[in-house]
Length: 260
Length: 261
Image (cartoon, rainbow over all chains, first blue to last red):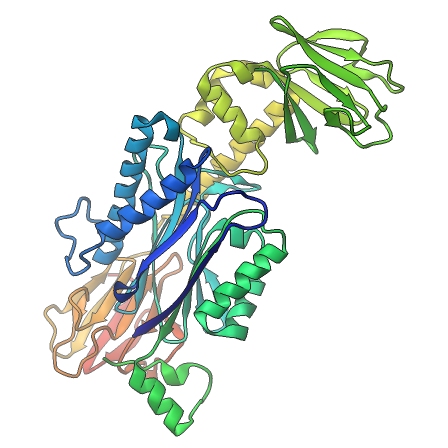
């Protein structure tokens, strides 16, 4: 399994600052998007702290995580480790906000995916989202932690409470699938079917990102827009073999065998 | 500082702090511009007089109403609803009150910026402590609405976590460590990888062959590597919803799925 990734962030057309951030460790298959909130520049501080903490907590992906905090029996150990890193980032932001009154009340959403051994572990807090494009359909992997009908009122964020409930999900991924992480600046401006169409039309992850940022800005760009698009690909020799033989039978079935 | 909250379809649309004189009218030189024929060009004004805030009608054509009564000049109390033409403005004196209430009212009335509603603290404060909020009919209607929404959401969260029966994989043939595997995790893997529930052994076995995912409806098998057959049909790119008694052939193993352990 190989991953090809595209990513982009944009201030949008209305906000003065960009409080969104994204980050990744491509070799380990770890991707994160955070959308900060708070007065002045503190939203930027919160989202950056969340990202940095999560990436550094998972700095040693070879470690099996057995020594890390609560092990959740319902999930794979990689998912539990991701959750633990997110909870850690919540503490770091919360502590900073308590100590520094200029940053009191700062917070951030997060959505992260850790794709390893053909399974994507997804963690999220707030209204940043993850989607899976699988066999010509876009599936939501997350559910916003906001009040229905009042989508600007969040029920969970990082950094505002001493402890946070991180929602987790796991989904198997196959070659041809795409995992998309984004802030609400995209999903409030661009409907899901336009996202799906961009994946079909462009295919290339960076081209999809660029197109969707433009689309969000064309539709108003009310908020910062950030997205990370990860394409799951088979092994190089599968691609080569398919190109040589010129076989493209029945959609993606031909690519699905990716024995390692 | 006290403020006026302009409501649109019973939602807070805009807030105006009553620090100096706030003028309300149809023309753009007003601080609160209400572009509607029912509003006079300079319709009314609200200003603070020491501790109190006062609303005065500026001899408007259709009049200014407080809580349904036409007024000339009147001292505003917290939660009063000022009607100008067809527009409702709720007077909020508590804006200067304790921090939690301020933050909470900001959460409710803010329409552009994303805000955080900590349901354990702010919501409690709003719903239990501030009786004064309840006196304002419009605000309390909105809060009750929110209360329901939050309660409904909690109910959905509760039911979502109710798991199906725990299924099992029974080993029919092939070298495995155990004869029965419980599928009690969200994802159970079959493969060579250490994280696998059912470990495959041998040189040419895939690291991960099949993922079995547990969801609210049951179990789904997805091919990840190598070759797998379910009831002798190859499992390709599709996802297969497992049914009781399904037979899985995974890289030399034969396993039977049972919906109940």
